[in-house]
Image (tube, rainbow, N blue to C red; front, top):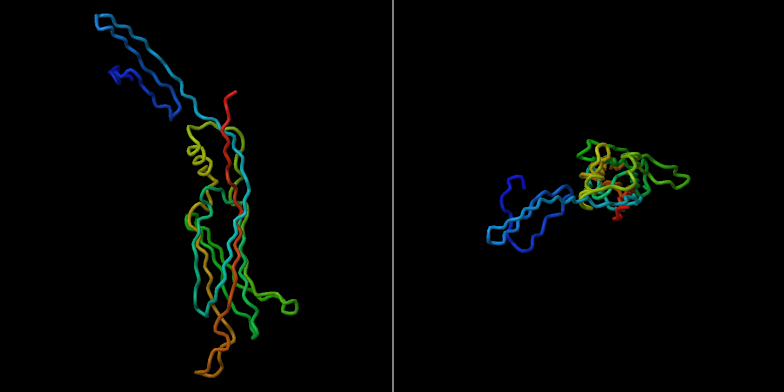
Length: 222
């Protein structure tokens, strides 16, 4: 302590070692009869050492519902918690219509914190091959691959925070908003007051997100 004041007079003293660095101090012994001995000391607290590897994982979500013309479905997720986003792909498929033309739905994604917006309208498949009406959006190489090797840090939590918040590698950590909008469900009724022959459609949405998750193993100093 640079102030050279008395921090403790206990018989046993515990020094904080949660953070790496140098602890400077002095020990004084007083025999109560005028004899005093002072001894300065220095303690070097080394950081902990970790071996870092990254494991690729695939996260998948499946949704299904029904939307009438003009209705909207939406859901939120945070797939970047504790991981590094690498790629995503989403496929929206509509049930095959008996009546033509095919319905027109829009699939949208908004990654809020990154200003990343993507959308796609459904397009009809090949009816002779029984292909569904669908929309797809995807992206890859959204973040760089994670660094591997041996790293020093005061704690596992500190190292994880540094790895996951590396500049230029933080895409997708916030909220993702997926939206489906039923624009048109054709054909409409020709005669006023008659029931709509196609009021909407059933749909399925499959979302696959590829992430890298850091795995830390504490190792000893050589």
